[in-house]
Image: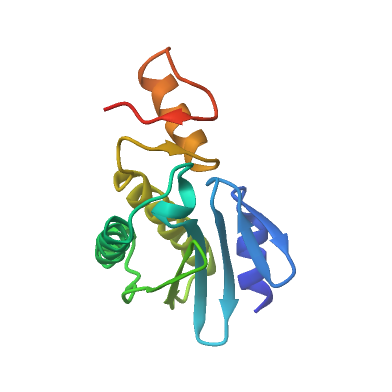
Length: 164
């Protein structure tokens, strides 16, 4: 297991936090860890209602969640190696969505990179599902501001409505 921990510790995208390695390349709470049967990746993101200043109707929040969950089933295709990634568990509770992947690989360096790719896939999938017309809270507002400033110099900062 030491070689496994060394692979995560040597990767510049992680910072160790106990048994977990926190991913520093995403604004969401994302972490990875070696497990007895391979590796675990956990990413916590806000629900649509948890990410907006305005209330979101239940039907929209439920539809958003179901679409997000279904899109995450394709995460296996994001892994650019020979790693087979089963469908993640995706659970919603108290304004948050917890996404967990479990996978196995013999090479710890490949596993550390795969964990990073999976967490960033969750971020990208989340951003693709952002619904226009709401004012978003951090960290989603920051993602939108970064996208606006990279695509247009008229970004609105940390808060504001999404452009239509």
